[in-house]
Length: 111
Image (cartoon, rainbow, N blue to C red; front, side, top):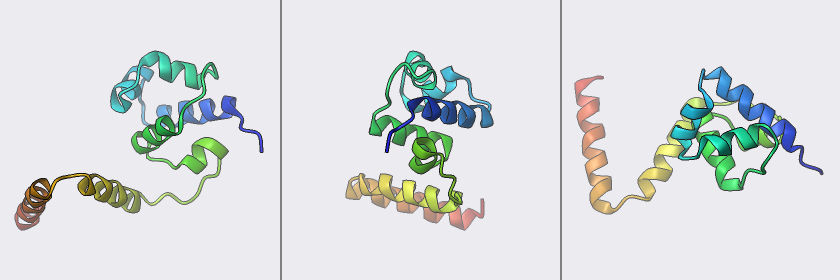
């Protein structure tokens, strides 16, 4: 299977525009440079797996969509829960206890 990097760039650009993000804002949200975003969207550079994952997280999409154009049903709650769990697992025990306390407080306040 040959990867079509031009199509990947087009899909990233399309997703970015769906969120009304400029290249500058997407670069800021992904900790990338505007040039990196532009080069990927214009097929001037090949995104790394890490870059694809950052873009997926910010653009609320899947690698399947960006890489292959396969639009699976996207369950925002499922993805958000997964992202939160991954981040919490990287925290220390003290940080996890703090997060638990915040969640408990928010639930009590019915935000």
